Amino acid sequence: MAAEEKLYLYPLWLRVWHGINALGIITLIVTGISMQYASDQFSILRFDVAVNLHNVAGITVSVFYLLFFLGNLFTNNKKFYRIKSKGFGERLMKQARYYTYGMFKGETCPFPVSEKRKFNPLQKYSYVVVMYVFVPVIIVTGIALLFPELIIDEVYSLSGVMLTAVFHGIAGFLVFIFLLIHLYVASIGKSPKDNFKGIITGWHSKA
Ligand code: HEM
Image (cartoon, rainbow, N blue to C red):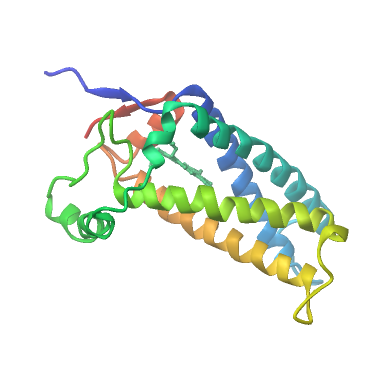
């Protein structure tokens, strides 16, 4: 039997960031939902517990975001996040067709993982949007909500704090949706467990 082919795709700093970020974001989602829907009759967590946990998880995710940002600035990992405009839509459609049709017909993946290509186009675009737009919006608005005296009082007669909270909530909701899709897509590998093992050990098993 041929030896299993494995690629070392996830260096230690990335795995540390990813693990802490995943736990932090899940804590933020649970505590965020708990605060949003807290009432006299029902709440998932006691309100003050949810607020404290949310603050601690938010600060942790923000500090570790620096590790992701600097890691992607100064190591080779940045090359996987570069988007080329030529053929952008075409690549996107090819991968979308594979996920919605080809995969179920047993076709081979149009963008197989290799040392040079860690992500397929859909993965790459979603990671770029989540990590360089949604997460930064959550961090900036979250810091502003921790120090509301920094927020402009009114924008077109709307409360600045209210608008900041709305942006914070929308970006949080979008990351929640991303996480659900991310978990599903990550289960599409050589076997459903393999990609999850990879982000813990660093080694990706080629399908
Ligand atoms: C329980 C929660 C999570 C699990 C089990 C998980 C699982 C995985 C797996 C298996 C991979 C490697 C395969 C792949 O690239 O698809 C991965 C990569 C990645 N995940 Fe997650 N993830 C979780 C949460 C998150 C969250 C909350 C974010 C961002 C907000 C995130 C962002 C990323 C990014 C950017 C990568 C690519 C890292 C790189 O190689 O440069 N993940 N995740």
